[in-house]
Image (cartoon, rainbow, N blue to C red; front, side, top):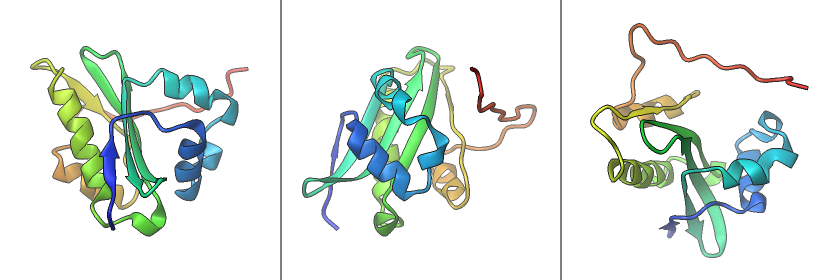
Length: 137
């Protein structure tokens, strides 16, 4: 597989294509995608030919807190190093801005846990990941 990493936001169409392919279509309100992408701190896409096959995105305050919001690779391109390459690029971007006590968080599911562990992410005693999904209206 021949792909290149590009430091840019995915388009709405690219975001929907990749995240839908990994089963996230019901995880977000499609109408909110443009604003959500625009509020990102940084993003990386993996491009094969003219098609985005993976993406990663950071959100946060850009100073102390960073959150790896999305890391998704098309199922037929998974387990080939694309996700690790995207994560490494995002980690490089954070490292160029990080303070000594920078906090980087994420939610991991299924087999992705092993990828994040390779990069030093771990469950920490005394901290519990929690979230709430609407409705807010």
